[in-house]
Length: 418
Ligand SMILES: [Zn+2]
Image (cartoon, rainbow, N blue to C red; front, side):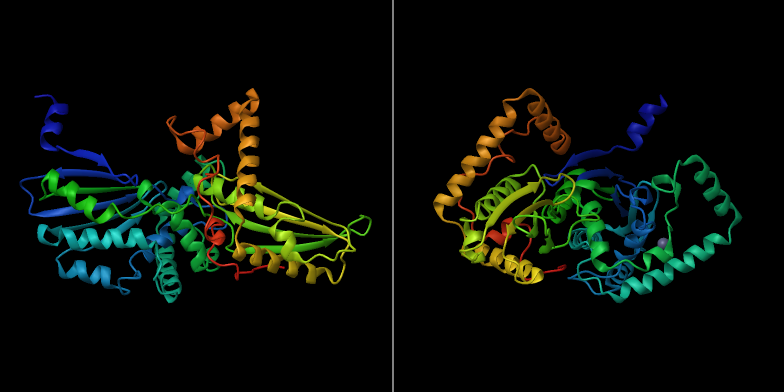
């Protein structure tokens, strides 16, 4: 018998994919008495940005430290009680979580794995960051004492063109990790520790049909968060003002607002809503700004659609009103908040939808821009079934409800910079 056939016969496996992008593999083994579970995330030290070397391995540690539904240490304790020893490793390209449990504890194990994929470290106590850094310092010291490990690092360091990607090991830079906040950790996990970036494999004492059914039962509801929040943007609205004394309207205040990533139907709705709110000085924002009738004012709105992070919308106000420049920026923020709370009139929404639609059609009528839109579409969605309508055009039949939900943040009270 050929080796190829022998392996196929001895190691039969099947794979499938859930709607949320999670890959599943089941390899039954009638001789086995336990089930081995592997949860594989396609993220490792090569994915770490500058100044964050070591974060993938750090998250591997934190994934055992509790969620909103489990206490710190409970993951390991429950699996230990079931007879398993959960552990994990982080490499250049991947993070691998593994354990073997009796068939009777398979559902518990899958519940725990799905729970931490769902939580992505929400509920992890903040003191775990400090504690796990201390553990990682010990691991780093141990590693530094091994000549083979030092040599390995030097050799890989020579192969890699820079410290980025493959140029540093999974331990990374422990001092740099000291400055990480829980938000930084969430942002990295939200980008990488998600169903569409993961594979769940079951090997051993489980039938293929029941294996797939169980993975689906626990993981199908795990959502992928909005694309990429790594090094992402802060929540809320930020505002700032500049004085340009030579200008006819010397005060320029601006607001930046997070919008959903593009192309997506949520982005299309949010960008149109922003357009409606900031439409000239007579729009909802301008009306709430309560501009002095004797002054000269101009309101404009724009946005930068981003694919790999949140998009950003801008509202600019130019004015002759120079009562304290910072005061003007604060007023602009408050006016924006009130305009969002008041919502849009049907007519304002309809006009914004028409403007956005006309702009999109104009882009598609030009070959260069049409090619650009198509590249964008396939680059982002990865398949050609994606449509040139959905994700680009706001839906005229749906009047936006709570505007703050459209703008990818929950509350306008978060205000981080003046
Ligand atoms: Zn470690």
